[in-house]
Length: 126
Image (cartoon, rainbow, N blue to C red):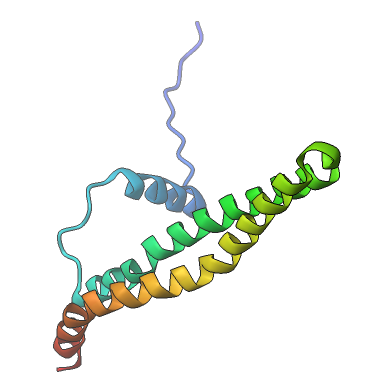
């Protein structure tokens, strides 16, 4: 009769442990012990987040409009030439306006966040 040996083998991999921690951190509840510097960084990053998203959406939609306008003038030039020029000009205007819109939104948001940023930075510098 054969004797059965119960064995346990374990292989440790630092790379696997880091990946497990990374995945776990995505699902863990946010830490309540946020440092003042982390809070300052988060508030500062919030000043540009909404403006970036808005200006990207405006830029992408405007670029697509420009493409549709170009398509109308080149492919269906006999029927939609004037419409294509109008749509293309609207697209160009949107693309050109996306950066000034971004700057305006960031400026407004920074003015709104300035008191909190100043308070947090004063706390950290003391």
